Length: 209
Image 1: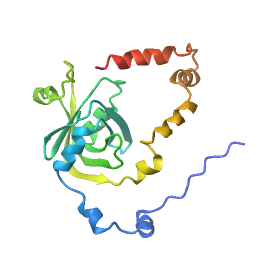
Image 2: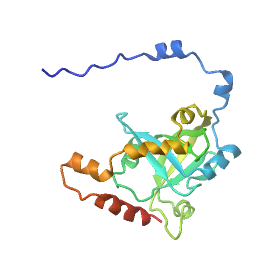
Image 3: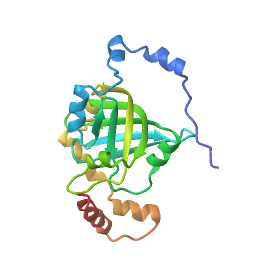
Image 4: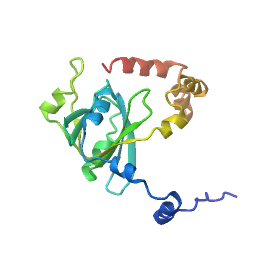
């Protein structure tokens, strides 16, 4: 007999507040409504971020974005822009922003434990002046995402410390991971010559710049 999955108990926001307590005044004060000089410095050194969006029904999506350090451009103290580089062409983020302009970013700098969080509203642009600022080695994006900042603050480093994300020893975890070719063969029920898909991906990656 097949049993329906058991759903864990849902905890209400009131219960969460009762258990965790309220943030200290200093924590509340760190949230800014603009990009200051410290945020600018961090953004200029960040080569990677995650971007969260949601559609009109609230179905969420989170995608990775990466490029040369400083690929996110500060247009002014309340506006950021990030390029759309070649990817899988699914364009979930674009569709979501057309329905629901809420957007959240988490920017990382390798070796730095703290994360810069930026929340606000976003939209897609093809403004030539904005795209020109994102040109890299004669390649200019077709589109960019503009983020109008409502909140920006540094998130403490506890998560990265616990995960040992920047610890070189943590890279040993990759040794036990199946290759993408093995995953594709299992998920799609096709025979993939060992290493063939990985080589095709590497060839594609080298064409990014």
